[in-house]
Figure 1 (cartoon, rainbow, N blue to C red):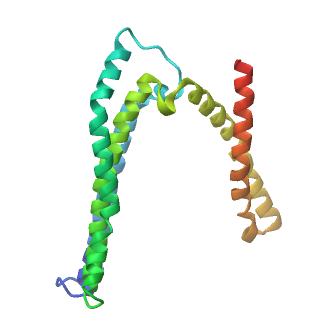
Figure 2: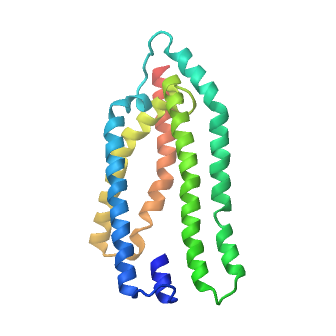
Length: 212
């Protein structure tokens, strides 16, 4: 974006094609690095997935230690969330500043978009780091979203979803190909989404009654 803008407004002596090529190459390199890091982290965390979905018992003293660490982290958690949310809100400021220069400074508006993305990424990084660490404590303590009742609820919803959505896909494709009414067949998706919520709630209620 910055290179294309620099070429368009003759900030740098670079052709638009070269600017686009450099930008795309940079995006592909960063995307490859990002995907590689995500895969590496996912493989490392795969053995701990049961903490989110299954009930478990901790060894003696583990619960107390985790509670202590969570209490110590509480202030940092709040601070990081505040910083992250504040940065996300303030990320639009560069655009307003660029607009203040007037229509003649169009390149400044492009620079401001880049600044917005940078500030947003920093803010999101603060939020994600705080939430992920707090979630790890909640998983070990089976608190918040990871209580045993919630795990049971998610398991029921997950099993229903694994059957429900393939059926919806089959209905959508079957109806669309038979009627060739692709212009309206997309309505199946919002209707299916609206129906899924009550189905999941009713199924969860039935499952809880069986447990009782």
